[in-house]
Image 1 (tube, rainbow, N blue to C red):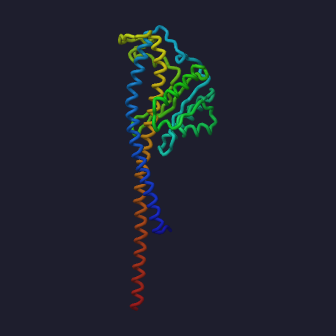
Image 2: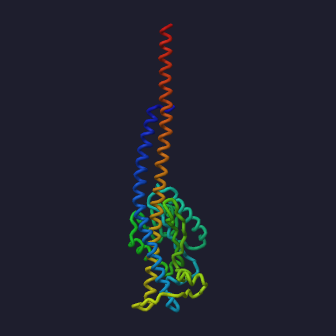
Length: 297
């Protein structure tokens, strides 16, 4: 049976753990705030890039670009975005489970992967997938140069016909406690993406709609070529920010839950310790009374 000393040691240990989880919660909250600001700033920028891209493509009779070329998907590239550290609840496990299902569904094709994050890298490496690259320690401080580096690798593989399609699996940030798993097709850029919302609703196959009459310094075709690359860079950057914000939100929620659980455990252990202490005091009183009664007789 545990002694009072055992309970005191265990309570002290749980309190130390609670201090650590509380500190990690505050750290995750600070990082989440920064990541959330980045996401909210990146979303409008990505929408505007797409809007200008649609405006440019609507002025070109036959848009031509290697990243628009569609071909049979015999070889695919899958970018899996996880965290570099654990203690984030089911965040990493959900991404890896979703990725495993996706990869099994495409097992008939040649698969290459790019791992963003140590957790995904370690699991995918154990499963012997062919790697096209790995990027670590990105989620702690997402910068545009990270996105450009990943996007350049992706564009190179697709343009050289080494892969026929590029997918990204990540957690989209919705709120502190809600993330949505996504498998987004990054390349080739689908024709539906280049249609304006008005044209898509009207069913216009060409994707034409009433456009603002911009004055371009260069021919629309040249602007379109540069905008396509900018669109890929921006989309990868947005996805990195979404994944980072979702990770920090998941970690903050997990550490908050761990802190509350530690508090409940401390309360339960304290009650058990008090019961043992009370039983010990009662036993000593009985012994004293019994001894006094024996002496009186």
